[in-house]
Length: 420
Image (cartoon, rainbow, N blue to C red):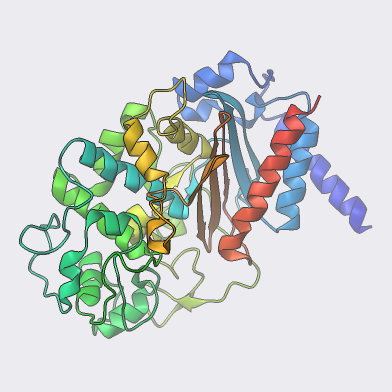
């Protein structure tokens, strides 16, 4: 009986997907690629991705999201700059009965850091920053917060490179990343409401016992949020405006934005988010006496900004990657030497193995991932010209390790496409 229920569930969803667009074309038809590069992104509906093995491919993905209890997912696959496949699976909003389309936008979590890193490296190429630029002090590039007192003089040694490579030396009494502990930060600062970034920065600069910057690698969302503030001070534009106008627009990536915290404030074509079944409640960031799921009011994802605040479709991200992949035919927005610095480790010591923006880089691929209670994101750029992006609108009990399951799925997906 369970098998029959599962069989009919898969069959029904596949039939719905096949009927979304009246025009079904081959996966490598120029219409799909033209829509990807030139036309509004909402013209890329699920119906445009049709392949001789579509049923097998779609069944593979549907089985995956059913197995992992994912409400909705979306993928995008390219080869040598050509869009081969872009499709949504499951629900964009289950309660409203809205099926996931290729154009739907989701939180991309720490994949945001890759965008921020590119923004910073572009400013370095333009001579407005350097990797050695100090962040704090009289000559520091962070101008807006010079009035804040600094308890540990080691903070004056922090450079742009330290923030990019998670080696800033941050420590605090909470023993956690302050960007995911807004209630605790507020209480430490004697506040009754969620702290803004200046309050969080004031909290961090009041701490003593830092590690010497550059001596320890410790993943820091706070450091990348700080990079977003530096972009604002250096350019005179807020972080989102600079990235949108100076980095994304030249790539014709026009549908990305910093997302909001509440469902009621969601942006156009943004999905609903879902927690995994065992997700615990947290104090609401809007009223500490209330409880909320982390997918909405339990976390302040908006304040993550350059560390994890962007929403995008897989096609948005894929188009961005094509402009920083060091491969033809799409011209890169950064110089080759900059791309090499971002993807090359500088030594065997852990502090020298931290890449800039990317999570992993080797002879086969560059890889960037992200995880929130509401999403998992995986972005892969392979040296043989393949690029793929996979996003979900549901958290996983496996947390940051779920991206390994996604990577395995995409490898099987690609192998199925290539098999005669």
